[in-house]
Length: 192
Length: 239
Image (tube, rainbow over all chains, first blue to last red; front, side, top):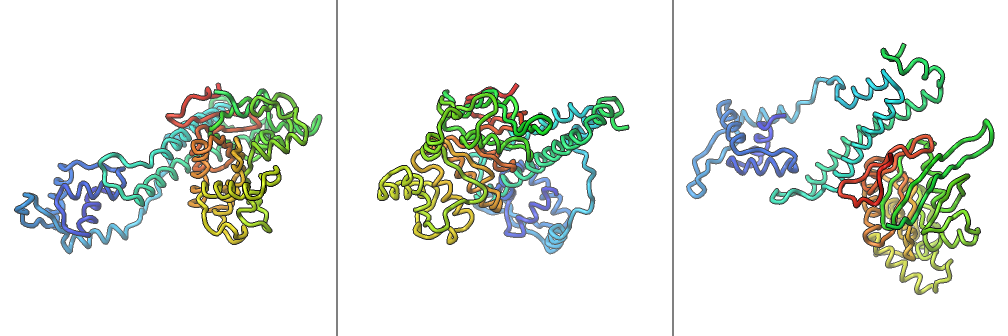
C-alpha cells in the first residue's frame, strides 16, 4: 500500500488540504505511519497529474488549497478496496531462517536459539502491552489505538507461537530418538 | 525485597526406578509480594506442578517451598487448609463456583468458613465484587452470568480477605480473546490495588505478556525469564 491510496480514501470522505490529510492519515492509522507535509503535497501533485484528484480555489482565510477526489480517483480507490494480495511471499524472515539453520547444524543450539529469540519477543510483547497510551499531541481514537495494539500484539504472538511449536517438536524428536538425534545432528551438513 | 513465595532447589518426582518421572528439577524461584509472574511451557513442562507446590497441594521430593518464610511442607493438614483460606486464593480454567450459591455467597464462602460473621463476610464480598467490576444483581446464581463475569466472581473469591497470593491456572481457557484480555487486565491490577502477588499459568503469550516476569519451563526446569521493560529489578535473570 502507498500513501496515495490513503490520501484518496481520506479525500473520498471530504475535501481537505495537505496538512489536514497529513493529520487525518496519522490519526486513522493510530500513529504507526508518520507523514511529512512535503511528502503529502508531492503525492497530491502526482494524483492531480493522473486525474485522480483536483485542486480547488485557495481558501482566502487559511491561504490553503483544498483537494477533492475525482470520479477517476473514486474508481481507482474502489479498485484498491477490492484488490487482494495475489502472491504468497516465501517465508524468508530472519527469525525463521535463523532457527531453521540452527536446527540443521546443532539441535542443542537450536533450543538455545529458540529460547533466546522467545525471550526477546516476549519482552517486546510485554512492552507493547504497556504502550496503549497514544503519543502526546497525536489525535486519538480509542478504537483505532486498540486495533493498532491488537495488530502488534497478534504479530508478536504469531512468532512466539511458532517458536513454541519449534520447541515442542524439537523436544519430541529428541525424546523419541535420543540415539539417532545425538549421532545425526551436531555435524556440519545437518540431516543425513 | 522479601520473597512471599520461594522455591529453593526444588525437585519433584513421581514413581520410582525406570518409571520415575521428574516433574520439576532444580527449580529456584522467588515471587515478591505484589508481583505479577506468569509461567509458560508446553504440556508436561512442570508448570502445573509448580502451582500445586506453591499452593501446598503437594510437597516437593527435595528442596524447599516457603510461603512468607515458612516451609509449607512442614505445615499440618489443618495449617495448610488455613493457609489456603487466609492467604492463597485460586482461579482455575473451570470456574469452580458453587452453582447453588449466589455470586455474593460464593465470594463470602471462604470468610464464613473462617468464622467471619455473615454480615461482615457479605460486606467484604461486595467490596471484592466491586473491585472486579461487578456491582449489580449479586444475588443471582453463577449460571445467570456470562463466562467472563463468572471468572470475575472466581477472582473476587480468590482475593477476598486480603489474601496475599493468587494462583491462576489457565483462567482464560474457556473464554474468548477479548473477554480473556479483560480478565487478565483485571489480574494485572491486583498487585498495585491490593498488594496481591499473582502467579498465572498460561499457554497464551498475549496474556503472559501482562506479567512483570514471564518464566518459561521445559523438561521441569526453568529455562528462561523474560522481564518487562521498566520493571523494578526484584530478581536477577536466570543464568
